Image (cartoon, rainbow, N blue to C red; front, side, top):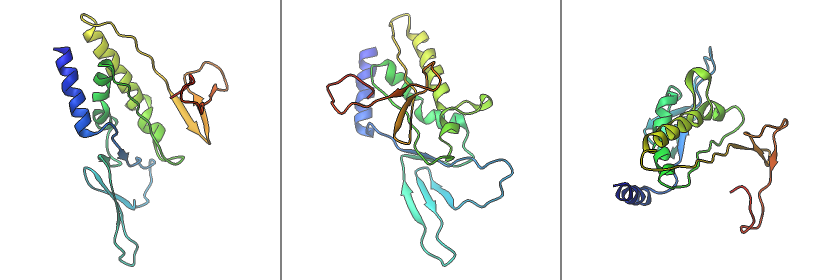
Amino acid sequence: AAAERRAVLQQLRRLQGNVKVICRLRPPPAGAGTPVALSVESEGVLALRGSATGAAPHVWEFDRVFSSSASQASVFEEVRPMAAAVLDGVAACVFAYGATGSGKTHTMQGPVSARGCNYRLLTELMRLATEREVSHAHAVRVSLVEVYNDTLVDLLADETPKRRLSLPDDTEAAGVW
């Protein structure tokens, strides 16, 4: 049953593609009254309103777009299937990209009252591993890194300041991939 499920999931991933690009509009700061120039036109379309002169809006398409009012839980549901895929042997990565202040930390970490994708994915991964421990043994290795100003930093390192990592040019060398 597990092998059959894995085969079906692999076929589904091939059909859907291995990379999903998701966009989330940052929740506005408390008390902000500034109008937002971006709007979610549909589940996968984001638009930048045209200028006051009536120019056509710029439109971008993504696999999924979340409005600024989207909950942490709804964003997590989009990446939740990755937890099962990891336990099925698929290497997976979730990362956030954007300018300083664009909401990456909010989406990935979140406040204690509304945890982000990192916490929720790890919780789901451990829940599934516990559920499957009757028939499977799992070893889980997790990395949490940040790329900032061309520097790769290990966020799980105990040292202060955090340990800097290097990316080798040689694809045969051991390192962070």
